[in-house]
Image 1 (spheres, rainbow, N blue to C red):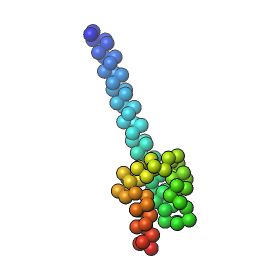
Image 2 (spheres, rainbow, N blue to C red; image 1 turned 45 degrees about the horizontal axis):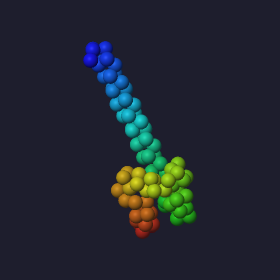
Image 3 (cartoon, rainbow, N blue to C red; image 1 turned 135 degrees about the horizontal axis):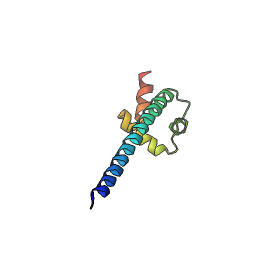
Image 4 (cartoon, rainbow, N blue to C red; image 1 turned 60 degrees about the vertical axis):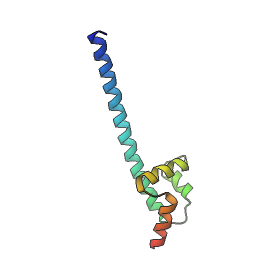
Length: 87
């Protein structure tokens, strides 16, 4: 391969890496704020976990549960039970 072709490939690779890094950090920030809002809503037993999931912007309760568990270390169900027990 000639030098120009390698330069183009290198620039494209750098662009792809930069875009991946930006999209990953912004989705993590959004997940963090929605999980925080969900934790607040879980203190009120009036709303079901499914309702809370939709209120904080998730369309799939299973995905919400996975994200919540990854961020908090407990499932939404476990978190809610523990939060109600503390009251």
